[in-house]
Length: 253
Image (cartoon, rainbow, N blue to C red; front, side, top):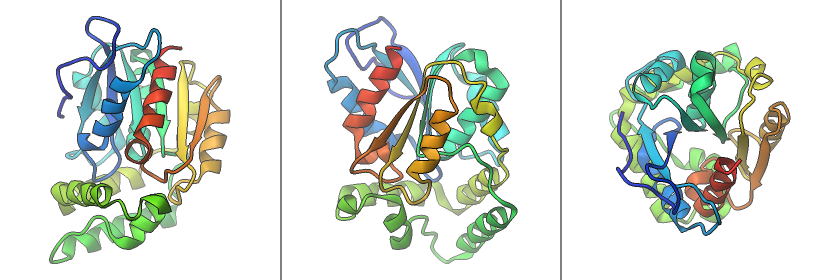
């Protein structure tokens, strides 16, 4: 686990609202840096300061173990933001310790489990990637599916995604692939969520469709839904200002 900067982002509160940020596969706290910086620039009356807490889920091979690792060191109560794989872990945190979560944001994620065929393919691809002479976690085909076409020429974004994947490496990719492949179905959890919640999808996300996100939001009582223009599977990186504004709105609820 790595924690975020020991400072508040915003203009209200003393210590800031603890916000746990859980990244997707082959990503680390750099995933959230543009959005956290954008949060500090949001001008809104009553905006709460936040205390970002980052958890790099690199050593576990199940979402249950990932959730326990977060809960072992997280504050007694916190807002929870889960992106992609981080969303799967967020659902598990709700199952294990729902009372500790004050607000929930689900970004570029889904509540359904993998089919058996997808499970086998996911783990097989991870094992094949691990045997390569040089591990490449992000390639052009994946980029076409994951980021908005307008962002395909964003060299800084593409370099960041590649750097995070390379730094994580093949062994982490395999462990995370196993965890994601064998995650439980969380559809039954949706109706039991009774805290302020927000679901965000990128309009061009080809990994998890906006329709899937919309259905998930409709099954969470009172959840806000945002389909973000100009974004794919990486809303916090592709549209950090929109993400930040939605987080402010959520924390004010």
